[in-house]
Image 1 (cartoon, helix red, strand yellow):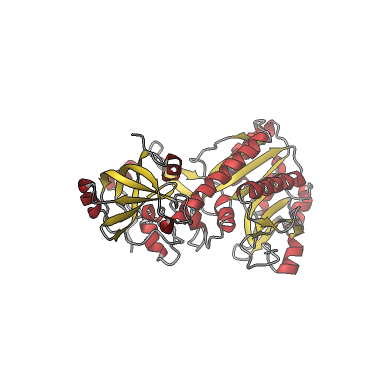
Image 2 (cartoon, helix red, strand yellow):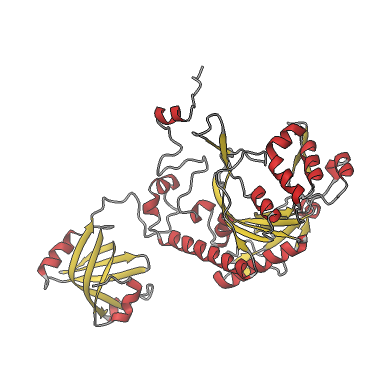
Length: 464
């Protein structure tokens, strides 16, 4: 007999079915045993009676979270036992066969609650148990639906989805790179991408005029409570585009997304407000203002674009200017001489998308002229030889005909956490790290064998 999901059993009234899943609950009512079976799609009440002695005796042994398969007839529940809170609340399965597939130890915490009351470190250590929780399953389903919607939306707009490399080159783009040593070329390293920034610009040189990717990004940042060393973003880049066209595209995408996938949510203002960086700092004292009318309303989504950022910010510790976002952002001044003369006064074609007081996206028009890109790096303190060493591939590509281009990337983890009303991004990621970048479930990072280090020609200095 083919196994069916619990949610489908309502279609089999009076018929025999086979269901499989986890024992969710057990209770004895006189001589009758009631057990809840939980699978991916919900709960089903099972009934075991002494009439079938062998099955009844096996049911007595059942414990929560054991994995079982049960055959039986679907029948209506007595009126007084109807449960309107679940899809199968009007029916039950009268069991006549049972197979115990897997026994389970007592789990470290209950999974029939939201889980907020449980120490997060314990939840993350036993994440495979924590994910049995209905709330987390809903978050993962919402994530999948969101990604699928974004993918379909952009493909219909003529975008091409392109995967870019995970093993790439270490370049100064802001945060620290995660480095991967090469066994084949001892003493050299790959880097994990902080973003697909250079690859998507090279795709514009390639004539891929509309690119997107659901991209994995990696940043070796110092521990921070609500950040992850690896995260996912929707990455978009377009050729021959103006800044307002980028904003209109992402605005249409998010309005359509909320309407289709999260219909209970209400967007505060459409079109999304456009606020300059200067206005935001003067009025709200932040470049991530929370524009909700009622901050206690969990269903209110207040989007806004922040534009006209300064191109550079002064770093007192380094005694030099640094890019406010990243060095590929196009200045709103095309004269290289003026940019070099007054770097602190030049604005950028930079745009951030904020939602309920958080940044959920950011992008810009990009520099596509080699002389301007070199000038930007020089202002940031890089020597010409270093620029050529680290970015020669990009500068050379720009010498073969590059269209004006720009784009935006949206952090999916942050976006989903806000929409789902979660306190942090770890609640919408299947297997997250802690704020200290530790993986408690697999105990990462961890040491490797001496043989592996020897193959990589790596030696550690002894602590003094």
